[in-house]
Image (cartoon, rainbow, N blue to C red; front, side, top):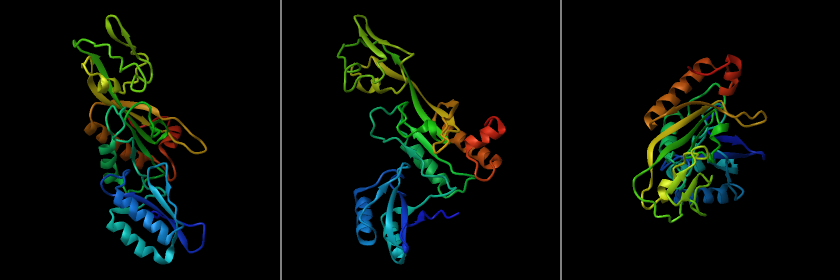
Length: 273
């Protein structure tokens, strides 16, 4: 199975290149890298590029006869091709600039990409890391999904009733906060533990008490979509990485060719212990 990220084109003599930057981070591009991609698309392709759901970029209709020259230009810009097939797909994370991140997950995505990029799996595998419960990168429908959480608490600092935490556009998106004559009230049943309120509370009435990461396994999209099941909660990035590594080892040991984690669950009746 080719990991080169060079896909057959729809036109004879042409290929599609799937790209990922090796620096500064696998789902971010520098202005220079964007310029190189645009130049290659204009000179050797059809003048267009495609952004994939896995936060990679594809350049279609690249002339096969110019492939070596193109690959050298990409390498010089810190860009590489891949992955496809049974290799671990690009690990994606929410934007590190998102205000709603309970914890920015870009560092974890880079760590996982550095560890597993190019590793052959029994079947297709996708890992998605969400900074909060809005899960913009679809962590619940990935083979391995992570959602960052925070536990919040009220301090003894007096609420100034500025209402930033309840009014648009910065207010709580799930209406879990109410301002009363006595101060702030948090509806713990509504709260999704994104921690955004702690970012905008100027008096410091609301603060982060603890951070954690919920790990979901066995989700997938495609023609037979399935939502992943909650597996466990981890208290640190290091413990999360260790657990993901353990899950991947288990999967590679027990999965049959072509099986995804959801398929192993169905066949075995459960996941790693």
